[in-house]
Length: 254
Length: 275
Ligand SMILES: Nc1ncnc2c1ncn2[C@@H]1O[C@H](COP(=O)(O)OP(=O)(O)O)[C@@H](O)[C@H]1O
Ligand SMILES: [Mg+2]
Image (cartoon, rainbow over all chains, first blue to last red; front, top):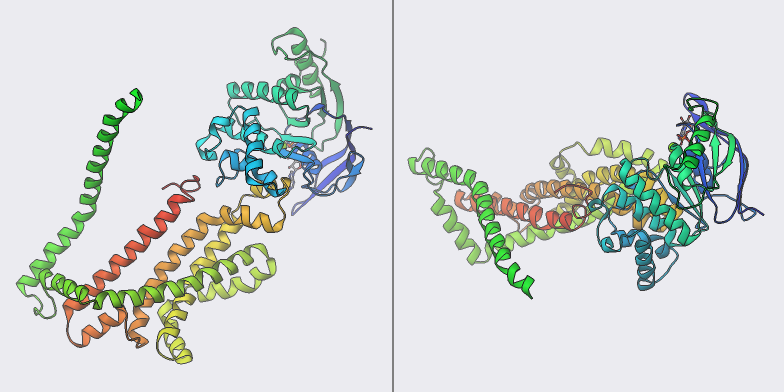
């Protein structure tokens, strides 16, 4: 049985201007320890779908099952990382942020801080454990956010364009770091992006969504060996294939 | 150890520079007061008003000194500050509670917002006669009035602050398993703190103003407001001036020593506001 089943999920937003379809009949499955990228043009419903999986939104049609159990509301089996750097609590140090989930679980101070420090080591920020978020760069803040979402050991990590607001060089570093984190932890990750190269670099499998109202258009496995070389021919071929699916390719023939 | 040996002179040099900097800042802040003092002294010496009504600085400060040493001024100040803090404590507790309720519950907002919007802009002293009629003379109406008046800015700012708490903090905390109670304590309160502190600062300023005035009306036996009012009857302008100076100094100290300290250790350290 797959770990996550997204079963014909739809959601329509009620707005003053009428109903807006956020996502329409999305269906796919996911295995444990798989790295899945959701790719699609801006506004196609990637965030909507991720927020449904996270339990922040309730679908108006279909359902999500994790481990065979229907999702209703948020839960500690899922960790979430957003695009916005402001997601960290400014009043807590990096360590305090990472320890938050464990604190909610009722774990003692010493134990949770030890685990939090390990998580910070994983994202190479142990030296900044006692810094407040506003003293950290955007990339560092996102690394703290990743450590924070992993610290209480959820089954699934959900990431919504976490590196989209970073400069290109930092983003490359962060992608390498995330690939390492995934290799060490073996987490199941759903990663939303509109950046095709990012998807090819990170994913085991890419779900391509149609433009608004979004639904699943194609599922493309990426079998390239890791660590991947973004300049290799195979890499570029995959990238081209994805761009074609998104209707952004320069030529149909490859 | 080598490091320490090298570091010492440079640290002390930096400390020296910081002292120089401090002196300059103090000088800059003191200068306007010096100008006013000189003008005051000229007017007093020229006897534009009678000396009785417009005493020289020397007379004012000798009164200030005499009353302080005799323990009279400290006693008045103590009583006033005690009333201030009692009223303010009531306002802080009730004000934050109502403000947070308004932000968290639609119904509470519907009930309180119209009331607060009408009552808040009325000058505090306008309520004084009512409070005196209802609660008699003395401490009780004074403290109540102070609490009542300083409550409004605290309500408004707590309400705004809770509403301004970022949705993404709430979502993050919920995803990490925070229930409503802990969400409130660990996210909403610290997230709203910059606003709550601003509300308290404004509330305290309101409290201070209305208190000194109501002390003149409520016939309390001690207090700076009462001191000034009483001194007028005797034409003791030097005592009045001493009282007024002390009111300014205490207000400034509360602002600088209490609020700026609290802010520096919390919202400024967290980068939620710039110092
Ligand atoms: N809170 C909302 N209220 C109304 N419409 C929304 C809301 N959030 C998103 N939408 C609409 O739903 C569609 C999908 O949005 P979103 O999931 O954010 O797309 P993506 O993340 O792929 O850019 C868009 O057309 C967007 O305008
Ligand atoms: Mg999005």
